[in-house]
Length: 465
Image (cartoon, rainbow, N blue to C red; front, side, top):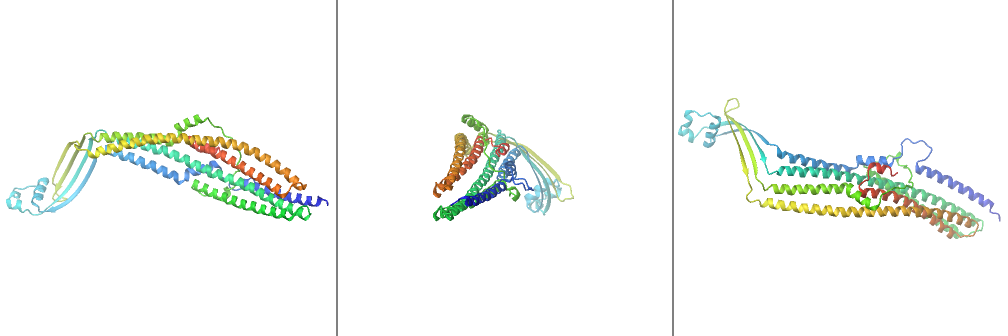
């Protein structure tokens, strides 16, 4: 029996499949010739939005603001304390009456009569009082506290920079996950269309008596499996879009969700030892720990200075009147006092706690250095492995495509079974999936290496696309 009619039907169906596959690919990649009102969201744009709207960044900034408030609070100890008090009193207590008349400078001759001294009539007193004190010398305790608070401001500011890098990485990870998911959908869409073509081919061969019904049933089961995988992949893309919106702190308009497809990139890097040295110099979190260690050292000095003597000055001025309209007397007082803590038990405990804090800061810095070395080493070799896997995946994909073409020709010629064809089709599908997985990991591990080095900036992240 001639195969020409069936071949023409098969070629027409394959042309139909290829046409719709190309159309779907163009739709997924945003390369459709139809005019678009909104440009696709780029990685650079996503990072910029994240740095402006991610709530984690605001949390880091509030920590800096709180530290600055603490620095200003420490400086208030250098300023004098001034108080104003306005009081109105009335009474007939003998001591009160005598003292009030003395302050009002209103004693008369008859006020010294014994009966009036023992049983005075009630009087009013309108007192205006100004007072103040100033710590003239506290053994430099305030200066050490100011230094400690200033170092904490710098520490939190540097830590905020590390927070920005973490936000950038989460944005890159979510964005690249979307691109990888789109490529998965593209591959699975192609596989589903191919499975449809295989099902049509098997039906054609069964009708021609060149295959058994088992081939058609196997092809139908294969198509159902590919359709299920496609549905799952489309769901993963939507999840990745939601993760990107969380990282950005903003929703993505529907017109900007057709992103530029994932493409293979090559990245230049430095040797491992240079990457470790760069991280130890550049990581903001390490710099933050070093500043915290210096701040804790200043806290120890502050605790020591608390044992020293203090000189406090004070003064007050007061006017007393029998009524608001009347005149009265006024007086003032000024002085200075020396304070020395003879039994500073609490100060000893405070010094011991400060020294423990310094030991902890030293240990934290040493631990951070080891952790940084480990993170850079892990990220470095992960990226090296990703680059090598990309080379292998690229070669494997090319070989699987050639094998698939050969098996398709052999199956059409009746020299291979449907099982053989589906096995090679699975291998080709897996090779494409492995290739895009390798492309995704190559980009993501490079960003992770930059994060470990402490050099992941907005510009570097924007260049990853």
